[in-house]
Length: 304
Image (cartoon, rainbow, N blue to C red; front, side, top):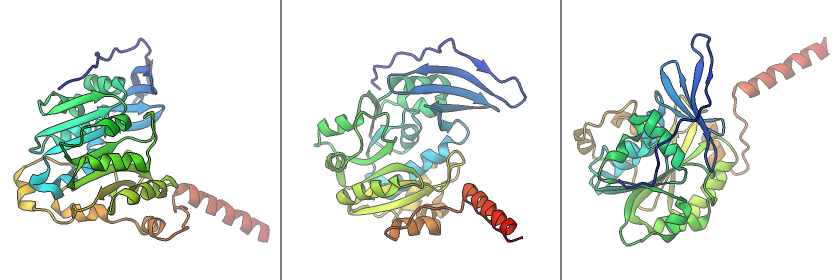
């Protein structure tokens, strides 16, 4: 493993909540890209970036499994080289390395995130010790643009959002990324919970890849449905050699052969949002129901 990382230094800023079950801020620092904070709460560790929860040590693998297993299971013995973009906690890489791959390259822009994970979430970051893994600190968009396309990848997992990368996603980026993939290769990218940005991502992805499947990962840490795009030209995600996959004996939290196809099933309102042009995203969530109840109460009072 190669990295330019210096060990994460815990800054002298600590806050404690003394009530039972409260959270304890164990480290915080301003990185060149964002504010990083590590908390301990009820026996687990949580990573926040710019006050947004990224993952916890208790539920993080729900998220990682959705990014890795559907594609690696479908690839089977063809899954030899993996590229990870982002994923500074190391969880995606550590999970992918449980497969008999030959090489994994990870490109993460924020060195402080990787160092924090090494110190506070060693279970997620342990994969970087694997001799098959190479960790590169840098802007993945620029790395993809300049990378040697002769040695192809079978899978790319993009575990990040537009920020803190210096360059936003674009059709050019996905076109450059596709050049790094084998014909049977696939890309898994988290696109988040429901919002207008989903169709923007879908437009980018469909301009470059023949097939875009939507994966629903109902992790307890994020609003659900939390969605990934599974992009490929040739790989059929529903054709899996389950005898081969089961022989690997990879421990999982929820992923198994019987749940594989279900990950590609979406709630009806989500499916309509994707397939019916002009459909707004107006979910029957708690906020909407409160508004409806308030309006109904106001109407009833007016009619009295």
